[in-house]
Image 1 (cartoon, rainbow, N blue to C red):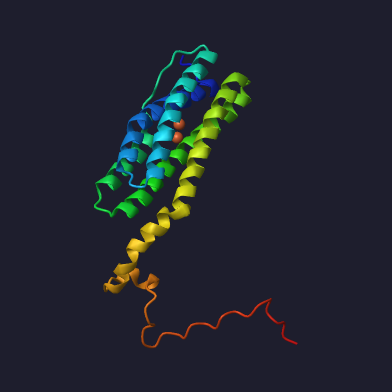
Image 2: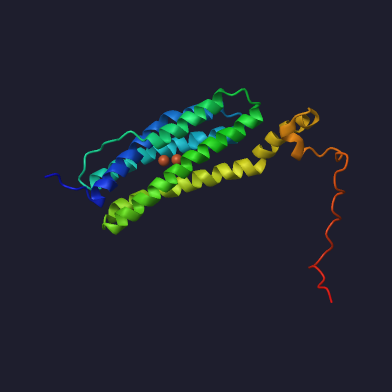
Length: 205
Ligand SMILES: [Fe+2]
Ligand SMILES: [Fe+2]
């Protein structure tokens, strides 16, 4: 008669998955750093690489706190995200666009990790693994901070620089860009709406 797995087994599975994901990221982050042009972005990836080394060690402490052997189990999810990141790096994008794309790849990984650690923490708490929960919360804080840092870099200039490189294309007869092109309106196009007046709409009497 086979024994059915419990939430504890599922928790260990997820933990092994996270451990493998962190190890995969240890190999992927240097590639992101190398592909980055903006100094701050490169430093962000390098900084998170250091934190990721810490995550591997912290997860080892989590295994120890549960009297479990340290083990990884191939994480298909992060492997897919890393694979997508690699394809982007093979594209022939200009430097600014590549930086914007590297941020997009990095944030996918962070969000995946945030989801995984959120679950692990909730399950650890539910089963009374307080030490494990505390350790995992420390990792989750790093992932959230890394994600916020990437958002700040994207919105603090990288997206704008990348968008500036997209401008000249508006002159090409490129259908895809038509909506964004601020060129003169096509024949028969509606006149632009008048600028809204201040305040709320007047109520009809
Ligand atoms: Fe991590
Ligand atoms: Fe991370």
